[in-house]
Picture 1 (tube, helix red, strand yellow):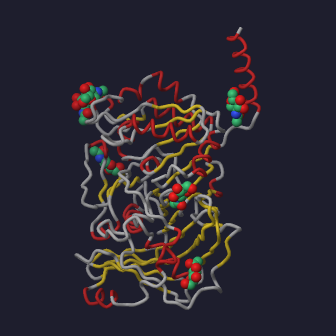
Picture 2 (cartoon, protein in one colour):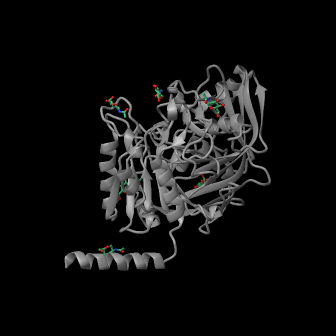
Picture 3 (cartoon, rainbow, N blue to C red):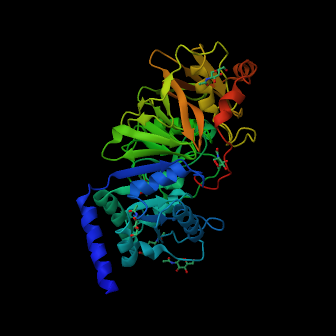
Length: 469
Ligand SMILES: *[C@@H]1O[C@H](CO)[C@@H](O)[C@H](O)[C@H]1NC(C)=O
Ligand SMILES: *[C@@H]1O[C@H](CO)[C@@H](O)[C@H](O)[C@H]1NC(C)=O
Ligand SMILES: *[C@@H]1O[C@H](CO)[C@@H](O)[C@H](O)[C@H]1NC(C)=O
Ligand SMILES: *[C@@H]1O[C@H](CO)[C@@H](O)[C@H](O)[C@H]1NC(C)=O
Ligand SMILES: *[C@@H]1O[C@H](CO)[C@@H](O)[C@H](O)[C@H]1NC(C)=O
Ligand SMILES: *[C@@H]1O[C@H](CO)[C@@H](O)[C@H](O)[C@H]1NC(C)=O
């Protein structure tokens, strides 16, 4: 009796579901360090999956032992999603079989797991190391031929499920990076990206991270669901603008190169409806940097790699982003800064890329964005910041406003309080090395400290993360 009534309920529910419009295909790319309290983002993941009764599947492939192994990572996310109201959270137990004393590799071929994938309304990819997800979800050694890059049945099932059924494909940090369709960044910092060539490696050839800051990338891309541009995370907090610009320039000519990049800040998300990518939205704590190198060119300056005429935009909560052009429609709650700028000298950063070597700014400010915002908030037309590192060269980052450049500021609710957000478009960026004399004279220029405290008010210190290269 009970069995039959359950069947009837199930049948009725199926009928109801098929009567409503098919689910949208939503991408939610979080920039890492998604905080437990970020109710807005967790609730958006659940609602984009179809609501609290939909099936949310957790993928913890990228987790690393000992602190963040996949099983603990799964329990962590299960508790979070359940806490925000999800009633059906499942574990997709697929992992790369490396040194950790446990094998999940074969699970990408396990029919039971594949059936489970076919029941998911939403997928959540946790943080970790993006190359691990590639190793576990692609078979790179089919018939003994290395780097064959054949999708495993689990990967095929996941992509088909999302394409045909809709729902949400969400991730944070490495769980965001792994959605890249083309070039996927795998490691490195901005300063190293300026002084050294970027390096392509194929993860399946057993390449290991150089761990010396070199910017590395996988030229073959990743899962392929995010196809609008180079995707990067922990962006403003780790000052990854230099690494993005260098990688865009170095790969532009490749079949898999992009002219445009999207860098998502921590605890922040960009939400893209795959059927309407001209209206992506930004939510969360900070913003998304979008740099375009279509009109940029590289040159040698003071004996080092330099680039001119990059255009960068910054979208914050409330704005709409056109994913194919990278242009921003500023939120209705923002107004133009033009006409209400101050006469003060704009802030010029001495560590414009938040160097990992500088303990006083790392993770706690967004130097590049601070400097850009300050320029837009002043009547000056140009300001120049410097890299923290000076050996072998100090690099200057010159920001310029021209007649296309525009900034909007407004208040937006974050975490229960109204905060001031400034977005901008068409900031012109040039990066070039200085010779020693120039570097010294610039380092003594004024205007550095005054505005800093005010501007950085909205940006909280980041937690020290292990995730994402
Ligand atoms: C979820 O399912 C439960 C039990 O079937 C039901 O009571 C509840 O109304 C559903 N919630 C939503 C949001 O559909
Ligand atoms: C996974 O690794 C474990 C321990 O290193 C090993 O015993 C096992 O055979 C591996 N499994 C596969 C499928 O390679
Ligand atoms: C690739 O597969 C072949 C046999 O199918 C095996 O002998 C070889 O060790 C594998 N290589 C790697 C790197 O796993
Ligand atoms: C690695 O990837 C690059 C770029 O796609 C390709 O040219 C190269 O042949 C690959 N190496 C191997 C061994 O497949
Ligand atoms: C612009 O500068 C003034 C004066 O320092 C400050 O009060 C204001 O908050 C700044 N506006 C923005 C958008 O940064
Ligand atoms: C967000 O709100 C929670 C609780 O209200 C608080 O503990 C946390 O510090 C806040 N975080 C930020 C970044 O404002």
